[in-house]
Length: 268
Ligand code: NI
Image (spheres, rainbow, N blue to C red):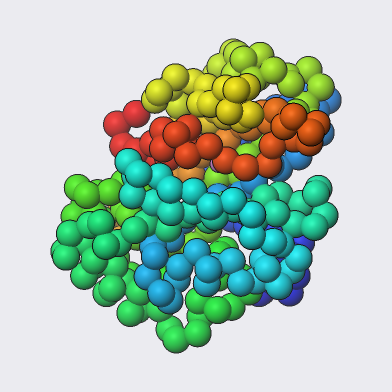
């Protein structure tokens, strides 16, 4: 069933996300059992800067449902551009959408992406729930490997398509674990593995945002030629600090996110 409104779309996204990342549901339940009430800080979506499926195209339904464009970010190392969107209702999660800058990659990679995008039936990318539809193209494991040589991110989008890459627990709203170190320790004690690339905590109070995340879980994906087990989605944790005017910082920090994108890299 297609999503008729924002709540339906967010529910659909969570259902799909926890189906392929059951660890997120497990962490959600573990914290809930501790008496915590979880708020979702943001949902992250990934795409390419191809005109049919760019950040601006993916953002359309969110803008129609009350979101506004806020920050813009450049991730030099990962060759990404991103924007974040906030709803007029501050209890709604922020939407963070990044796109791979195709012009910074090889003609081979660009050709592969063009061929994937050409498989999307015309207009499907404009539907309200495109960002929860999953993979709108067929792709072989060979193509996945070819993309992986140049960009983990490109390979991830090719394999998983349009669905949240991660949801994010808003640490400030936790009672017992409102310090990111305490939360990380609690999760590790419960047996969850965190991404330690660049240190477990990315960011600092000085940049007004601290984040950590689980490692992406590996799942079996059906390619056009074979099935393969590859990294899928992760769960993120964000602690926000106040600006001099007393308002909580709502943006993102490019230097930290360059590292957190590695949560879906192989071999970690
Ligand atoms: Ni994030």
